Amino acid sequence: MGLRTQIGVVGLEAIHASRLHRVAPRFMTGVGTILTFHQVRPARPDGFQPNGNLEITPEFLDRLLSMIRASGNEIVSLDEAHRRLREGDFERRFVVLTFDDGYRDNKTYAYPVLKRHRAPFALFVASRFADGDGDLWWIALERAIAASERIETTIGTTAYRFTLAGDADRRDAFDTLYWALRALPDEDEMRAIIQEMADRAGVATGAICREFCMDWREIADLAADPLVTVGSHTDAHIMLAKAPADRAHADIARSVARMQAELGTRPAHFCFPVGDRTSAGPRDFRMAGEFGFKTALTTRRGALYPEHRSHMTALPRISVNGDYQTLRYAETLLSGVPTALANGFSRLDVA
Ligand SMILES: [Zn+2]
Image (cartoon, rainbow, N blue to C red):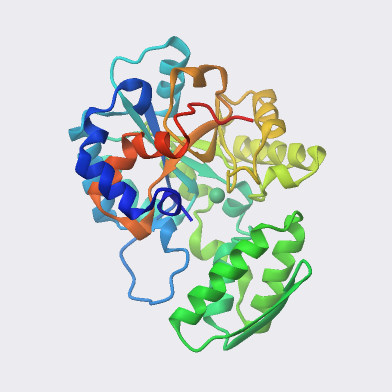
């Protein structure tokens, strides 16, 4: 799931060893990078952590922020990144830090580190998560598999049957089921299948949202700090490209209205849930523009280039993968070199 699969550990090691990430010219490395984070919390001993790619430790965040600055990057807010792209102000390479979903651990563990580094960052909130009744289906799937001895389910036209004796079985089952579910064109169907698995395993999915996500008061506390930008991550965290236009529009509209009501300001930035090609496409980039967002962020992989000036609502990011917490890899990824290679030196991916 991340760049690891596209470039490979060997590729990252090779790039790092070649020092290409240090000497590559600007046309290759771009003018800046937007980094994606999800959860930040202390390492857990569990052997089955299929969503572990989505979390890093506070200690790694701390070292990462030092490395970003030591390697000559400025850490800037999304507003400032937007200004630099618009005005072509590329004197210094910049990095934007973005945290998706509104996890409470962002406040408990990430915020103190960010504050100590005086690092601006953006928090992308799905309003239903803050309301307390959102569906964090990837965690429900993890818990359903963790609590099951066997799984039998049908996804699309394929029947799946797993006997789960240990962590390795569960990891295999998760990988297979996760990608089969993600391939479904109908997200409601995907969520219903996961809910059924969770019900059968006795997992209380209704409590997951409150357990993991900040409520509005907690978000408002953070929003009061000038270092913090709070952006919209839709209402129900839906993969917009899979929804009809009216539903996609209504979902974003509700998120904007909820944020305005709870935080007193209209969000200026947007981030597409899941954010890959199956979840956000040209219609959605246009829609984000029509809502007046200054930027909208995908999870398509890449650095920022001057050409993104004309595509502010389809900006790429680079995910900081929790399976992979070494500064060596992070520095290499941050440079934009691995993604430039993986993208065949194509600087824009907006279609
Ligand atoms: Zn998300």
